[in-house]
View (cartoon, rainbow, N blue to C red):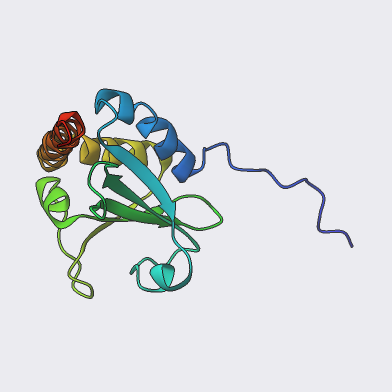
Length: 159
């Protein structure tokens, strides 16, 4: 008896990390190239300590080339082979602003997003939250000042 009478069907949804990459693709232009959003795939120890139980894990980090060593983790997320639901853990203040309760076991603000529509709505809310905008604004101001200070040092005549 052959139980395989039909071909398997791939999900018609997009990978969560690709949707996010597309959403943030114009960020550097808006941030005047003073801040960047980096999508980082988690593996090894970072994956084991992420508090996400999914196979495919990522984090979104705000950085600036003008501030060596600074990073702000906006959120971590993961998904399994079915792509959805997506587990997401927010930076505490962003999660609080979005009204996400803390999980009892990890004391982090986490959600399970059941489909692509809810996922897009939620990450858009995080990236337009006041906490995120204030952090980006402050980072841009500091980066611009660092740039100006370096330019001034290059302009000083040598004695």
